[in-house]
Each structure stands twice: as C-alpha cells, then as structure tokens.
Image (tube, rainbow, N blue to C red; front, side, top):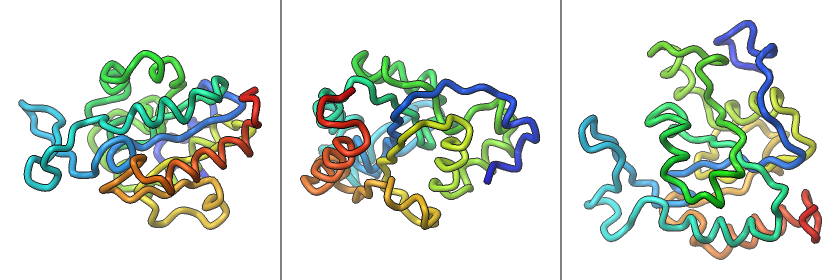
Length: 190
C-alpha cells in the first residue's frame, strides 16, 4: 500500500530507526480542540477547552520516553501540513525535537500543491502511518493517536488509542504506551 500522489514515492530515502513512535498532537499531547487562524496561528479553543494549553501533556510523553533513548519519533499529525514540520518542531522542547526523524507528510513524496496537501489530509490517519512505515521500514513501530477510524486491521496492535479530550493525561494511555514500549524496545531501552 502506498499513496497515489507521487509515483516515485519509493525513491525518496527517509530517515529511519529501529523503533519508531508515530506521534499525533491534537488529542494526544493536548486537548483536541485546537483551532487555526491565518493571523493568530494555532491556538486552543477558549470555549471548547477552557484553561487548556497547547502541548500541556508533553512532559508526560517526555517522562514515558525517557527510559527508551533509542525510540525515534515521526510526526503523524495535520501539523505536518499546517504549520509544517519544521515550524512544529521549533515549538517543542529540545529533548523531544532531537528524537524526530520526519513526518508522515513530505512535499517531495506527496506533492506541494494545495490539492496534494488536501488529499493527504483527507486520507485516513492509519493509511498515512502505514504508508510511512512502508517507506521507513522500522523494525518495530507504535502509533499514539486519537484519530482511530479506518485503521487497517493488521495495524491495530501498534496503535495506542487516545481520547481526544484527555490524550496522554489518561492513566490508561500511559500504561498502554509504557507496556508497548517495553515490549518493542525492551526493559533496558536498547
């Protein structure tokens, strides 16, 4: 399975790693009620998520990944398209930024025009992730996401499902991620 956007998709050589965690942002490291305005940029909805902030659960992710320094991250979020991969990484703490090896959307793979970006955004998240897994070919991979519809059945064991309102703040999600990391990486974090 691959994206129909670029017939040369397989010729681009993405960065890879032994173990990759595909990371969504909205509904995972922050409440799902994130808005975009052309002048204001990305911000949290004051009416749908009062008192919530962008990246508020990021410290939880940092703590959960700390025992596993070999785990690399791939951004699997609409943030890959807007504001873009580079701009998104600049907003993250250095300890996480250094783990990223790419995003599921890349203009060289999917196309840079408006149609290509919109087509990518309309593709189910699970299909986006599986296409990236096929390009990167990690030995093991997991996905942390609240967009859980239309995931291929064979990939559901790799998915840690989040509730978009609680994301990583939910104890169940933290336990699931820790348990799956221990299985795919090992207790020592090698």
